[in-house]
Length: 337
Image (cartoon, rainbow, N blue to C red; front, side, top):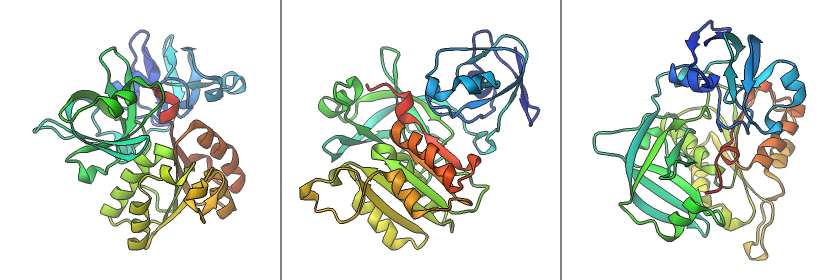
């Protein structure tokens, strides 16, 4: 099935029962995406002509009105013949090759009672080329996969850093916290996703993280610092209690040593023992309160679905452009394993 992308005019072939996104990635065309399972809406675009069938998806990702207007989720849309779609391509990712690689657990470090830093070592002759903000999928023996954002910059890739939150009843995260040993073998696929800073722009950046949504922000910040970027960057990190800001001192140190960087932690449920004197409430509300005018900004959001949905609803009313909000929907996509 031939698929043409407008306005670029690029064309590729989709195999029977292959989604538009699967075929595009296989052929080296990078459309926006994150979850790949019809939950986040990042891959949404318009079908200009032709017919597609839409596999199961979550209604919040594609409303009935949007579907009636010709919108589709390309991660779930299977062409039924030649189709023309309207989508923006992401040129910066065109040279990134998605690989399946083995790795060893080099080190386990508990950052918080429910957050483990997992450091992975690739085979000696391998390196993973990726963009700060992308993620990998750990491939489990039963065929399932668990996605984690890479938490270290590509410029510091001797080991790959993941932040694993312990999910109650979670099979993989439970194994990480109770049984995983150093030198254990794992397999993963990556890098994946289109969550990374758009380098062709030069305006101020707001990074908004919730919980372990800090992981890709850490990679992005490390890369910006490494590149000596002069773009203004403000990180808002939302968590429940002080203990959940598991690398708080590191970020405070960055704020002291980088004059283009600001940091605002926000707690939604501070504990009495926290003796918290900082911001309290929801992290998206703190961003909105500080920035009544978001025109000219780019916002990158990573964290729980509720946070991202709230920001998506509020920020346009503060002038944020539709093409200036980027989100990492890792919690949408990845089963609580």
